[in-house]
Length: 265
Image 1 (cartoon, rainbow, N blue to C red):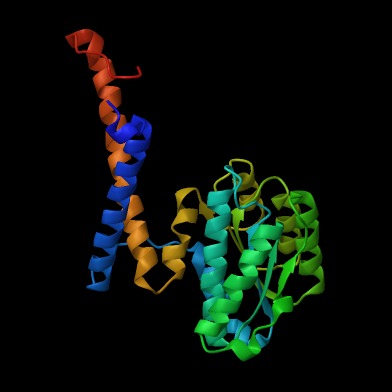
Image 2 (spheres, helix red, strand yellow; image 1 turned 90 degrees about the vertical axis):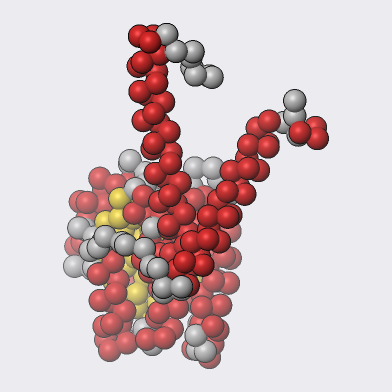
């Protein structure tokens, strides 16, 4: 019987949400107490960290992009949000280091989010006086190829130190990546789409693959909150893998041993 008129699916979602909240709070407490998670090295981040170190000296701009994905779209929202968070982390470090940044996007909603994120990054760093609203640019709106053309134009016109592209990217990435490769521009890229991943490897070796994209916030941040989220994701991923493996084993043994079938199978 549904509890208080709520469908069983809704109750299940609420229970899972509560578990995730409790896990996140618990891991956040552990991280603040000094229990940092073990993180395997990801060489892709070396490109952007090195660029931050050089940017203040060379005066060259670091380009940041969450892609042309749309916030609110079921397919692109998760990757776009990760791209926004990654841009915020680098913008914060650039404000501290004195490195110049240029942030571009291919969606109007993402553009508005980026303007607020970058502005807040400079304000929190105590560098609000050097924030330049023109450094956050909208190059296209929900047209990936038009956005790629705009980024390629930036590559040709701006003196860039490096480019970080983490978010929703597809076949348009070939245009951006090849333009950067021809200009010997250090590029760090990350996506989860099977179309964009092979094209990234054609342009750079600094690539985040699949789940590495969703760990980018924890690798780029120094505050404990992203670390706690990463630990929660790892725990839930482990539980999900165990459930899948146990379900497969049960399904194989079910006709042999005469076990009752699993619900939904």
